[in-house]
View 1: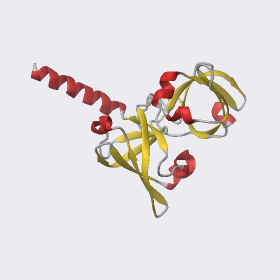
View 2: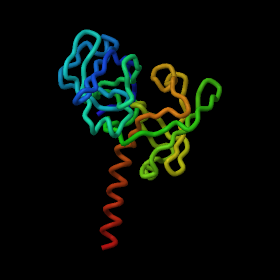
View 3: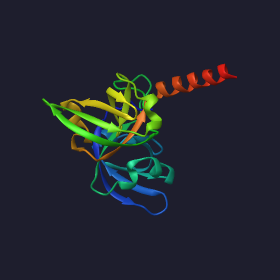
Length: 202
């Protein structure tokens, strides 16, 4: 599990698309100093497993399932991505519970400056509209955000200056695609309510 609080921005130093895609990501040595083989790291919100590691970088692989559900198919060498290591028991939960299992791709509809912050609107597949509640949480490219507005599959957030500088969201513009993951708790509540509705109808 993750929290959606980005620890550092990494750079894809190489990417091999043959078979399962293999990528090497360079990042701050202080963040990667004790990462173990088999550890999980969220890369732009996608939970990837470390298959090799050396000072200042690690290697991971992506399956076709991951490529089909995320923006990873458009990743390239030199690209900057948000990184977060898995949450340890007892650590502060600063954002919200994020699984790293991306639900799909959303498109940025608009970016509007508001003083030093920015209001950003996203369009997600309509099938996820029920999971996007005002004042609820959503992970966008691995960043925990609070939903300020929601109508159908469209939702809006406010990006404060820290988020703009500490993540890659400050580089995003209208038309860009991002990974999104709905709140895990909301998902299970909705699933349970759906089950109860079906039981009542029988």
